[in-house]
Length: 252
Ligand SMILES: C[S@@+](CC[C@H](N)C(=O)[O-])C[C@H]1O[C@@H](n2cnc3c(N)ncnc32)[C@H](O)[C@@H]1O
Image: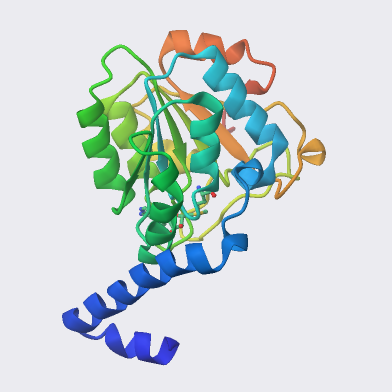
């Protein structure tokens, strides 16, 4: 099948057939292989420390809604909705995972809003449509495992359109804790704080997990939480689960 799929990628009609096949396969897999669904309890890479960060942030801050990039199988999406009862808007670009999650979210009509789109237009359109005004928005950015890394543009779009946001990013380097894993795609595409230097006109502050990597469960992936609204930063600073991190000045 993979040879046939490769052959189909050479023209537009073939690509449309391959996409249709993936859409059907994703929906079929959801029903035929219930084990693939996984419990929402293993959300956030099965990391209890990360779940505690999410729960602390959403308890302390009155968010208008949650937006996620990179739905995958929808486990974290479902967790974020069921823990907060907030509407979750999520997007997935891969047809198989989109169709899989579409089946999963049928149980949450009007509460989990699944999009089939690249993360950048999704963020622009959804933030504008939500028109949250003075209310904060929560973002979970996890659409990274392809060559195309949308993360910097995602953060730029969010802080440009809605400065009153809190952004939690998965797979991010925790500078002073090597136990936490992070993504590095090479060619300037390492998920660490210098990656954001080109958008440092947004004066955001960075918070790392307070829990040492050694004590984290699950996949022990690193994360960073970003915010630039002073009131939101003060609230985040008061949480035991996060600690503010400032990069050392580079000596010349
Ligand atoms: C690491 S997985 C997300 C895991 C999920 N958030 C969870 O916690 O279970 C990354 C997902 O992002 C999707 N993705 C990658 N690039 C994307 C993009 N530019 N826009 C939307 N989705 C994207 C991939 O297809 C994949 O399903």
